[in-house]
Length: 312
Image 1 (tube, rainbow, N blue to C red):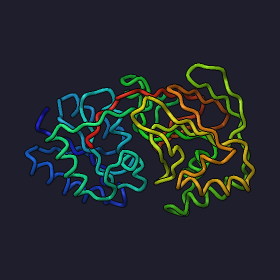
Image 2: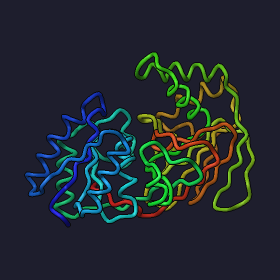
Image 3: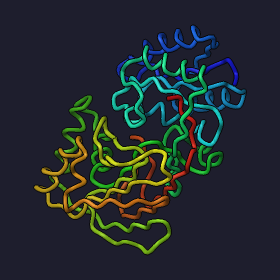
C-alpha cells in the first residue's frame, strides 16, 4: 500500500465543518507515518476528476471529509477498485457513516480510526448498489456511466413521495435550510396521491401496485437518520426493498414519524422484499440515491457484493 493518503474534502459541507475537520484527520494520518495530499475540486465534476487521477496514480487510501454527498462522489471513483475508503463524517445527514457504524461529527476520532485501520490492515468489504437506466447524477457525469457501468450508491435509493418532496425543495429558493424541506413536505401532502408502480425483483414477474414510496436499501437510513430500510445489512449481497403501499394522507402522517425508529416496518401498509436486483417503473417520479438526484424512473439497481473496501 502506498504511504500517500488522499483527503477528499468538501470545504462547504456542514456549514464549513469539513474544512476544519480535515486538519485533525490529516494530523492523525501523519502521526501514523503516512503522507497526506488533499483533493478539493472547484465543483463536483472537477473534484471527481481529480480524485480519479489520484486513484489511477496509486494513492493508498481515500478519506472522504464531508457529508453523504462527498462519500457518494468518492464511491464513483473507488467502487470495484482495491483502494479503501475512510470517512470523516461532518455533513448534515451522515447516513453512510451511521449505517457503517463509523463516528459521526467526531473528526479527530474518525481520523484516528482511519489511521489505525490503515496501519493494521483492518478493512471491511461492503456491498454497493449500482444503478442503470437513469441519467447519471450531477457529479458522476458521463465518465461514471462509461467507466463504472452506472452510478454507485451506498445507502438508499428512494422514489415516490419522498423524492417528490426533494424535487419540490430543490426548486424552492426560500426558506433556507431544513425549513425549505418542511414546507415542501407540507405542500406535497396537500397534493398527495399514491403512484402506480411496476416493480420487478430478480427478473421475476412484474408486481403492479399503488405505492406511496419505494426505497431500495443497501444501508438502513436516509435523510439524516430516517431508518426507512431499518433491517438492511450492507454486506449480505441483497437489497431491502421497502414498499409503502396505498396510504391515505392521514395514514401517511401517522406512519412517517415512525421511520426514525424503524418501527414503520410493522405497519400493514408496509411490505419488505429482499432481492439482488430490482427495476422500478412509475411515471413522473424521480429517483434519488444517497440523497442525490439520479433521474426519472424507470431505473434498475443491482447489489454488487464486496464492491468497496472500507476502513472501519
